[in-house]
Structure formats: structure tokens, C-alpha cells
Amino acid sequence: IVKPSSEKVEPQIAPSDPPPHTADLQPNKTERLVSPHKDMPGHIEAVLQQPSPGTGMAQFKPLIQKTPPDSEDGEKAVLRPEPIQKAALSPHQVGASKYPFSIYLGSFMSLDRTRKAVSIFKKDHEISPYWVKVNLGNKGTWYRVFTGYFHSAAEADAFFKKKNLKECEVRRTNYAILLGEFAGQEEAEEMIHRLSQIGYSSYFMPGPEGGFKLYSGVYKTPEDARDQQAELASKGIESTVVER
Image (tube, rainbow, N blue to C red; front, side, top):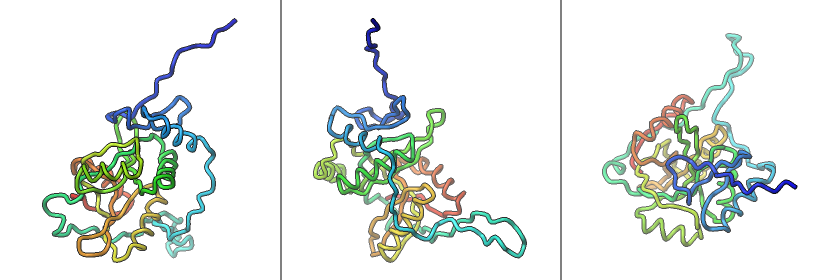
């Protein structure tokens, strides 16, 4: 008679992220949020295990455009990025950061799993999460999920309690990548969808004098944002690292 093994498989935790607030990589290559709270992990994990349904996302003008195949020079069609309005540093962003805090929700090693987790948070908690791609060298590429922008840690703490976010952590994230400014919210939302089509997460905030500022990522220091800014530049997307 063969007795079942009692050996446990320890999850792999995203480097530098505390286990109680982090999504881990299981042997079956799926991630789930790990926490002493039992309701949220099962909630997230159960949905992540389900097959991906059709997105049903409205179609927007793609950010990457193809050159006409019958061009005069006879060259093959290639992908060319459509320019985004250049992000300018306004006087209101000089000095102290106005929204230096964000709420960290978890980390994933897969962009697909990240998108699914973001969808769950949106539906179940009515929040607007965004992810930050981080390259940890030999530890691999991870996607850290955040939500919100807050004046103080106390304001962020009150928000996650109101939204019943039991697995989260308030973090100081003074810097972000400014992608552009838009007069209307619809324009900003359309750009968010277009950027998402090529694998980039973004979010907007009201400008100090009206309009909306479109950002990507949150970072502790300007240096932390340089890799992402360089990657955006390689796609023809101009941006500026600013205090948020």
C-alpha cells in the first residue's frame, strides 16, 4: 500500500514583494494571490483557472498602423506606431508630488493572468487597477498591479477599507510616466484601450486646470521608470518621467 505523500510544494513568491500581498507562481504555471485571508485567494484563483472567454471589447483605432502593402517603393507592409501627443512637463508638476501614494494589489509573472486579475478587481470591487512591468533580471519579468492615486497614506488606507480590499498594501510611488494630456475623458479612455492592445497599461487623472493627464506605471524613483520609458520610446511613444 502506497501512502500519499505529505510533502508540500512551496509557492514561488515575486522577489522583493511581501508574501501576504503577492501573487505566486504555482507548479502548474498559474498565479494566485497569497494571504492569510481565505476568501480573496480562492476568489481570484477560481476565476483565473477558468478558460478565457471572448473579450467583447469595443474596437478602437489601433495604436500600431500598417503601411499600405502596395506602396510606391514596393516595400513590404511594416508596423509603424502612430504618434501620441508629446507629454509636456507643466509648472504644476514642479515641486512636491500631489498624489504620491498608490495601493499595491499583487504580482504576476504572466500578462494574461495579470489582465484576468485586473478584470476581477474591476468587477468585484469597482476599482480601476493598472499594472507595472518590472524586469528583475534572472528573476524574470513580473507585473505588479496597483490601483488609485492618493494625497496621503491615510486616504489610501480609507479607500481600500471602503472597497473591502483585504489583500493590499499602501505604497509611496512618487513618480510615473506621463504619456500625454487630453481635453476630454473619452479621448483619454480611448488611448488607454489603444495602449492596452500592444501590452501597456495606463490610467488617467484630472489635470489641475481641467483636462486629463494620461500616465503609465508608478515608481519610487525616476530611475525605476527609465526601462519602461525606453521601451515605450522603442515603440515610437514619447513620454516624460514626472512626479505624480
